[in-house]
Image (cartoon, rainbow, N blue to C red):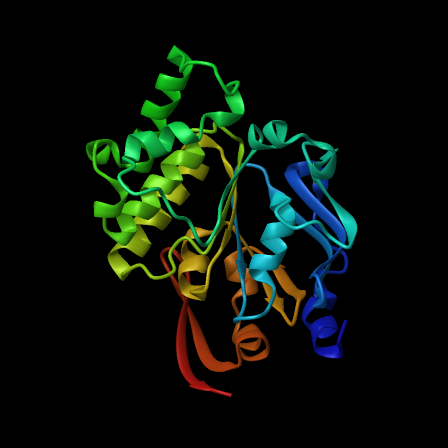
Length: 279
């Protein structure tokens, strides 16, 4: 770990994340891709139960790579991720899908598939391959469509929707899995501002009203500070700082992690970042 990262984290030395207050916990993680070496090194990361934890940092800092390891989409070179006290590598595919829902960056629905049909795909962990849909499946899909705010779009083809509507439909699909943990990889990328806020409002409601544990990768530090309960700021593949937004979002962090000179104010929904110039 480099000296600047040590300096950014030294105040946290006596405030290690507490895995006992979490459903999802990773420790001693070294994560990489074939032929790329280790990209992320993370001594400890916790997603507190019933809260939103946002992974933030510049491009290439390792946010999505870390999220992939937490979801088992990518197996760490070393270390372990535990879900409800079990190593996720030991869980079967359906068993994991009943506990953890993942919405990746790139999602493609077959042409003509409706929003409702997509939501039913989220029920696969709960059914055998040849089993018919049950009343519980129908109830789960209805609830998921309502929670994602897309009930009125249920009969619309996915390829006819706007980007924001499609993203909410994908969220409905993972909600139909009925998991307690939800991981979202850059769900607001390529959306206009209105739909970015709509997606984040749905995510915030899921954590507050449904007690879901949510991990989300976001590029916009101001949005992360407004909607998340906790931030994990990464730089060069290592956590630089973590904690509540009003503790993490500082002018020093914005300079060290994002390479910008900025001022930080305090608004009714948390810190407000005012970028001045690149460093």
